[in-house]
Length: 166
Image 1 (cartoon, one colour):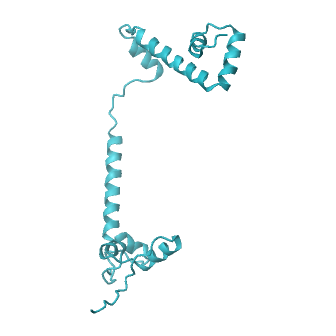
Image 2: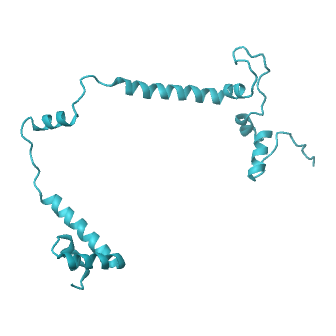
Image 3: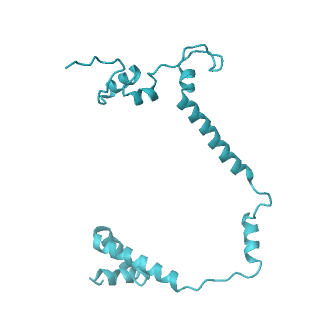
């Protein structure tokens, strides 16, 4: 066998080696990364040349339609509007859920008050919700506990500190 890796790779790529030489080349390629990269490079080069030099084949009239019907790829006569409607409806539902979450209605439901927000007689939400706490610069107790358990940096509590007078 030849010692030039590109020459040997070209012989192997075009199947010009007999069975014994091909087996020896494959064994040598498993152990030599240079030979392996030369073979893969030659294989890619041969594929690129083959695709650029082949002339496209024009199908006969009606041949494409017969092939599509035989494979079951017929174009549907009824457009599938349900795909479009389901996508838009999912987006609308997610938008409503996001709006409910940002307004805090979902948090009221999660708190277990039992009453729906329309009938609820609870006092208005305090300033210690996560959204308002982040704006105010304080951290609610449940988030403080979560941060402490995960050892995430402290943060201020919602209990205002007395300012020192100078």
